[in-house]
Image (cartoon, rainbow, N blue to C red; front, side, top):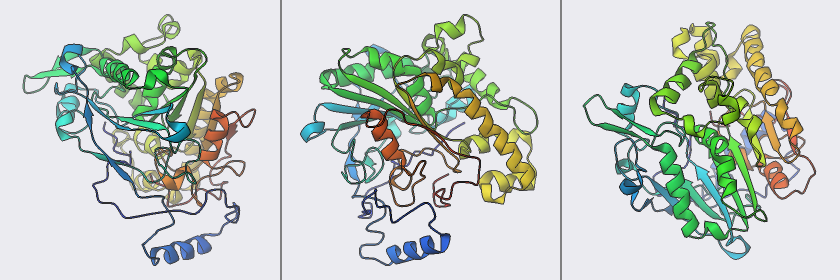
Length: 429
């Protein structure tokens, strides 16, 4: 079950793009669709095209392969060394580090993993230099990313298929070895980064999107434990709060996916011991259980109507959706009132599972009602005139306020769809 939602892997060159200051309040929540369309048309006709909408020109960052990967047992599915992209910080950000764990679904069967190793999600042979987005949390534009623009930024490539958590081996369909060594990859990459300056960080943030968001949740406490107590270490999980719910046919089909990952790749080592003492390992792989034992401050960013989960958890192909559901799962605006009630039920399950966060004083959350998935890496979602807003704050503003403690509490849950007028149809799904 591959997920290719992460937006950084664009081939160079990329159009030169910029965006207006993010805190302009002229773009209130009541912006009409007609005005928005007119503006986008005007921007499209500008020189250079869209020069003010998506941020500064993205910067190519070369792939660094992990040194001594084979000796460390830290290899991709096909046995090649894993890699990461490191962009050094500057100014007062030179001692601050943001480490992002790439997402990209999971492989839960030998067949899936055999196919996966023939791609960048299973082999570094297919990995290329990437462009750190001109906007988003990895962007370098101070206006668009004021809290993290000049930090050291690392994008850790995902090539194990189990959210950086497996620790065993298997046999591919062609008889070759399948290396399920995600846990070793995570540990070895972080160790190497520590030697490259991460150990001297004064502030550090572990982030991830989708399957990388789950990895962030799984490894948050371990990451924090590597630093002295006086260092500000926090975690940000974007679109990683996957739910254990029945699909529209009444089957827990996504449980079966996670069950396959947990047992095929032996992820038990990263699961909370408190959970394992009372529950099956598969249940302990779901974020609702994991977050109960996390001690490190964490920010949960998710849509209550997460487009990927609606398409793959709630309405998967295995649930045999009819044409009406196929139209609905691809675009929430096509859903009828009965289907919206089902989606509301999904959203309410997420909200209920997040109630534990209310008792964690140093945690934060931003649960919007937009039909989207992964919001930190896209400039349009992170901090733009048409970004989702809660309490009149963009995601970048909410995360920055939480990390820097500019506000006492940053815990915001949106109302049910379609109540939020800042949920643009242009958001990525």
